[in-house]
Length: 339
Ligand SMILES: *[C@@H]1O[C@H](CO)[C@@H](O)[C@H](O)[C@H]1NC(C)=O
Ligand SMILES: *[C@@H]1O[C@H](CO)[C@@H](O)[C@H](O)[C@H]1NC(C)=O
View 1 (spheres, helix red, strand yellow):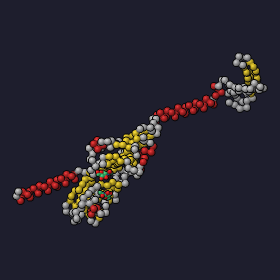
View 2 (tube, protein in one colour):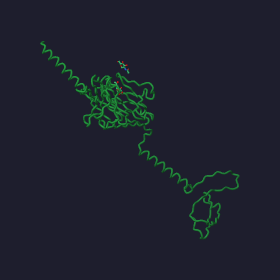
View 3 (cartoon, rainbow, N blue to C red):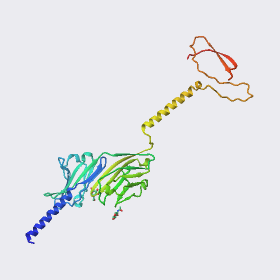
View 4 (spheres, protein in one colour):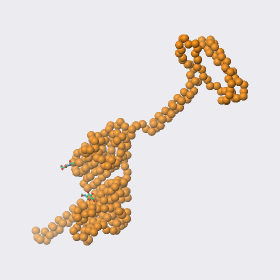
């Protein structure tokens, strides 16, 4: 092999290396976060140049495109105003290889492709793209009293890498772990006895991408916000699910119907009680054989005539059941009021 041929080979090899590097970095990492989170981290790992080091985070769909810029002396101005006061990096970022950007209070409009680049003041090298997706929509799931289990659904793409970790957390309870999946097996972390032995995921979740969580014997205490956080090959995916445990299993119309029925029964019961003398035709009384007299109850409501008219005379007659008149009594009624 001649010297020029060797040079040619070395050149081709270097071009190949550059191409590999470019294609590796062309794939954007995906980072998902929900609106309302305190902050989100956009990862970028690279050693900055020794001379005139500079790191730049840009969004090419914006003008000005700079989200954050830093050189040896600290942060540089020229930042797009919508990121003002919301971005930060490790103070020693340029010496540490960790060029990750922290973005505070992410909003839906922050969704987009962020490019991390380094420069020595002359040449610029793109290190990585990060596709940030700021989500808003939460999935709503209801569990009914008495059901054996409830499924918190989450399906991502099939064929996940072996080193994928999946963590189901109670994001409303300080991100308490519900179930942790790593090294291709499930772990329920220690302190949270609330969920121990009650949670499962599909056996072949890496193959199917179905990361749904099954929660057995749900109760009121399980109501809350669950977030599934997935780390896989540089991507950080998130899914938020609101679980509501419902005690009564009756639909609303049935509840309304029952309330109406109770009200109707109550009112008619009250009316029956009030007008019971109209409906009660037989009284049953028991007396001792040696008593001298007995007062037989008989009440009635009659419309009394107006004041000033003649007084009325009423006759009260007691019959035996055979029809024999036992007693008659006249009652003169003096009307003082009116009906
Ligand atoms: C990089 O720095 C950020 C803080 O800016 C930190 O949260 C993150 O864990 C660091 N990453 C690594 C790989 O050290
Ligand atoms: C996963 O497996 C690796 C080696 O196979 C081991 O070093 C690591 O501690 C394991 N992690 C957990 C959480 O079990």
